[in-house]
Amino acid sequence: MTCHRILLFALLPLFAGCQMLGGSERATTQPTERLQGVISQSQGQLLLRTCQGQRQLELIDTAATGLPDDAQALFSDGAQNLFADVRGELISRPDGSGQLKLTRVYRLQNEGHGCSADNFQQLMLRASGNEPFWSLRITRQGMLLERPEHPPLALPYLEEQLPGGQTSFSSEADDQRLNLWVAPQRCVDSASGAVSHLSAELRLNDGQTLLGCAYYGGARND
Image (cartoon, rainbow, N blue to C red; front, side, top):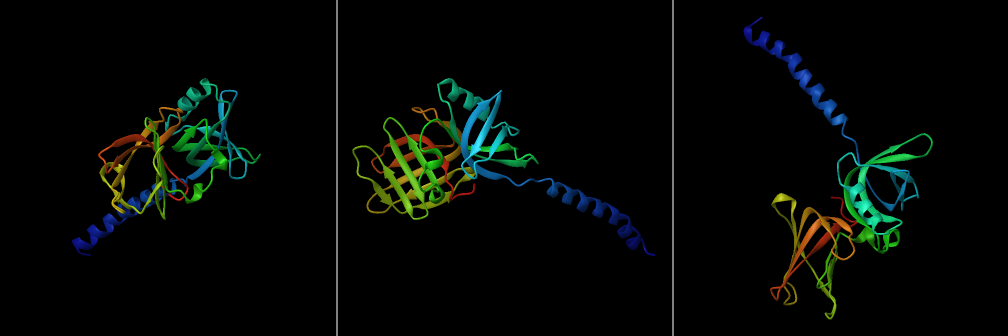
């Protein structure tokens, strides 16, 4: 047997060990699920009553999302129930109960339509801000900007991924120029106290810059 063959056979156990380790790491990755529902508190626990199937899940903040602190702040303002849009690892128990180990909070609010919101599954993104109020909804068909004392403005758009996890939505149609930037950053609505997972900056063709918060809708699986 030559030296080359001896060396090859000696390395085979090492390669096998690396492959086994890689397979083990992949096997430990757990799928996550996005759920919407109403949060209540009971005996120091946060419980999510889901819009989908009306399951009751105990929320566990294993990823340090900050949801327990944000929820407590909204409950302290007098809210009885909160609406949440979250993602996490779902753990079911034989008795029908379960837990959701949180990995992301898309939205937490104490007002609004919640489970009854229209067209959530068609919504890609919603951004809004205050002073002055503005609201921008984006679907696969286009974007719609609404502001008091302005007619609704519907435009096509171009989406671009930017460094640092930022996303740009822009339009230059119908003699209008509009640019929306969203970034993965916890954002609190200055009027309602609602918490979103994206900060937003909207620039209009008149040079005006509007700030606010944003969240991805059901048509986007980010």
